[in-house]
Length: 218
Image (tube, helix red, strand yellow):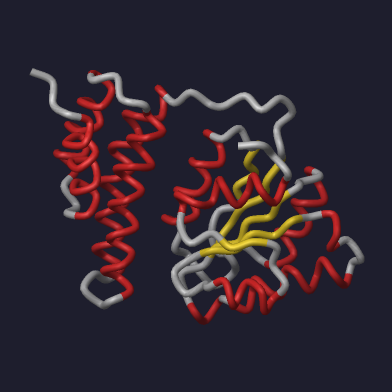
């Protein structure tokens, strides 16, 4: 007898939180077999688990090795789920440049946001992690992006976000791009202070904020 959707989502969440790769694979396969909406499986299961792991990291209960093992479980499930994603067709794709600012190599949160935006129909140009400030601006100009997404998990690299915005201002092109920031140490107050256009607390809200910034109907 097929299990309830809530039970499968819980397994997906717990597989990530508890670094259980075997459960992640099993739950992802069950989600497909049960006909669950794949976006919901990712957003309501894997993303929740990764965000809970992030909370434990913030409180000092998890450290970087635990986060990496959580992400390993998440990616195993994603490998099963992603081929079944139905990307939303929003006509002409809105181009987005995304990356982790220079000095930071933590890209788990950035990767989750990237997946959510791709599913929502954005055209993503992923610069990866430890990205030099000038690369964000250069790529945004190159692809004529509408949105620049900046991520960091470290307090020591937060200033890099402001430097991106400052470079846009210095080049006289600030008005061409919306800038969204996010990551563990980032807050709405910080986003406002540096002149960012938007702030996303997590991958779950990133799509909503991105759509609002780019004038895309939900």
